[in-house]
Length: 322
Image (tube, rainbow, N blue to C red):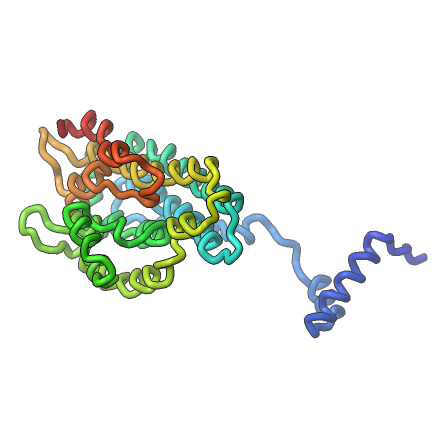
């Protein structure tokens, strides 16, 4: 005896028929595919074997696996951050509530990365790190393209220009090209060899591979980056909750995340009061501390005093820059 189809199943079959009819597809073929399909497993869905095969170290030092894995995990979180940023940028009917929800998600991702950075600060033996890092040359975390994309998606390019020339470019106004501003972004100063004053191979490689993509992104989001999206909201949509979320995003990205890196560099790359070159020869002490760069995605949300004291207290305490 055949079992009667329940009203719930019948309703769903009807909805499926409508769906496939409207798309010009044959529902029977799709049902056959469902009938023959295998059950999905966790390991197939997550691609566990493939994922775990990506941790290929360059040396025999055990702690290199920690270093490699943490950076891969960070890149995955940066991918999620960009995923949320694009939803804000591409939303043609953006509301303050939607913006706040996405900003809170981004802050959650950054908080996980910041709080887990202890794995890097205390999770490796210093002697091992100083040895296995030499096998990584000229690769460097400086070359994280996704982090640069997060910056470009977040704010106007002028806000990423090195502070030593930022005011000059502001005064020149619209006559400045994107390429001129890009050539003077703050992080390029970190790609200068401390001894020769020349661009490191690390920076040269990075520019060669990613400059075209970066310039396309800069062009695409000139009027739709997160800062411009915020400024274009009606005043009633610029709620205090949204402002707080964006201020936290600024702190997480441009102070806390960079300070955690600075702390790691301070632990592993300082010896007898002198700075050791970072991997790839990048000048970490000039590049990482936020008080030196004063990078801010949402400048209208901060007071002049807050800008002046941007990350200064921590840097004074840890790097003895008083």
